[in-house]
Picture 1 (cartoon, one colour):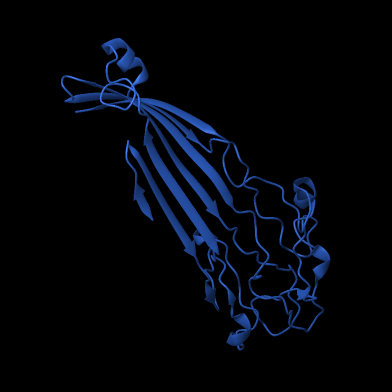
Picture 2 (picture 1 turned 180 degrees about the vertical axis):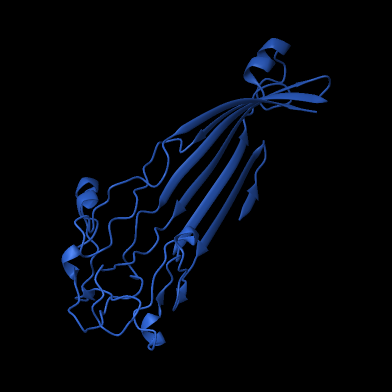
Amino acid sequence: MDKRFSDGLSFLMAYTWNKLIDDVSTTVGFLGQASSRQNAYDRDAERAIGSQDIRHRLVTSFVYELPFGRGKRFGEHWNSAASWLVGGWQVNGIVEFQSGLPLIITQGQNNVGLFNPTQRPTWNGNDANLSASTDDKLRKWFDTSAFSITPAFTWGNTPRVMPDLRADGIKNFNLSLFKNNSFKGGKFNTQFRAEFFNAFNRVQFSPPGTRVDQSNFGVVSGQANGARQIQLSVKLMF
């Protein structure tokens, strides 16, 4: 959706609802999180939500030229100094919300005994999502008791990718403040830019440990995004 308002205000919004289903994901980590087949002879058992499934994504951007200075709603008759000081300001922003990626629950041992690529854990079928405070969630992102190590010579029943168990999503705000200074009859413009990436310093937590037989199973131990960054620059346009 693209909406252009009067007085220098424009607004753009895009929303995507997605559901990715496949029976194989990338097998190399640099293309995203990868999953492995458990039984090469039972392809139907590999059908699951894709490892790159992003259920919801909303991106909104706006540009607002503040109505101050000559030629604007306020300040039409200001003197040159006042118009230069107060006029020419512009506020911009990009807001991004995105669902987290689904988790892939694994186990280290593979004792099926059929030369299969991997053995998945056993899931009791209960919803492993937890409602808790942020501090508690970091220590236990999901109900780890819902999963256990699969016994020898047995296939695990955990899906290749968990459908409703997800890592932390994106909640990001990028803001900027511009100051346009035109001269020579508008032929030149010196623009001062102050840009704030992750302006509110929001944390996106890294995915929790997903291997059943490790001590960090279900524990979040890192941050996926960067801290707030501020960038100042001057741009000459002609």
